[in-house]
Length: 437
Image 1: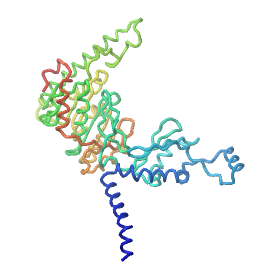
Image 2: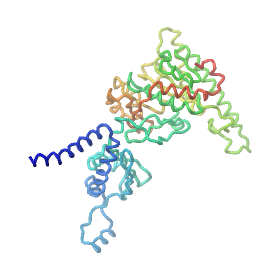
Image 3: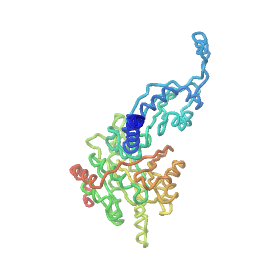
């Protein structure tokens, strides 16, 4: 009987502790990481750093001076030298460690061993970024941050910079219109594409920006944000009327830039500009962001008249994509499919869309349309997005880099409320007045 009591006294608390830890790890991974995962991973890293680096082939032979010093002062064995490790900096999602590489090493050597480092130190993932020549940052992520997305407290937004998602390395994915003026976002029904669009509109609603929408699904996607929109077209006919107005607005802005460029021998260099951002703030036109939902609807035709209208709209979209950035006009093109089969001009438009985001798609060809021409290895990752993870996507750019991202949940009502609260920020653009919803 006494043995049973002892077993209950010892085993009961241990079972409760183990069950609580398992529950916390499954339902509150951030709490589990801070309480359990962080100390364990830090201890593993500190205790096994040298041996792990040697096993991964990330060490170099010691210098002659080092060998002589060790032999003269101690009797211990002379071992290969790992990269010099900086301070371990804990974060709410993992650890960060800065390494100074030894002569002859390069960042790709460390990146190739990321999977081995992950297993050795018991973390979810390891990411390597180059800080400067010879110095890299190791970002150790303790758990799957994309399972339940929680954006950082300071995501790094700003004017024309909207944090819309979280990357798999726990850093925010920021839609920066200065760096990436135009973007293509693809995704099947219920893939999270609309959620991505909501975050963009809600993030831009509080900024001094004109928002223009073309939603050929009779406005069901963009109409809830009508209070903040400067113009809205809900079918191809209205879009055909709206696009020439945007083209004229762009041309007027180029005339303004040219007038400012009236370069004479005495013109100060700071007054010479090639885009609206070089103009004085008092003369600078308001930026315009054009959202196009279901872009394929603009390409569909049924009659000869429709074909003529489509050709005109495609030509206008190409002009906006090629020349809009300098005039402060940016494109956000969304759809389920977008490729050469849509018709003449489709691939030319796509070539101007620097940013690419691909949510879950119905076929491999759609993923290739979005990512195949800029990051071919990302196509397989886009095809592997599971239906039970809406909002998960693969983001790429023309540099060839790509990463998995996931958009946090934002209800349609909350996004619409943000737009209503920001309705007073709708700028005065007389040319768009006829199209204001």
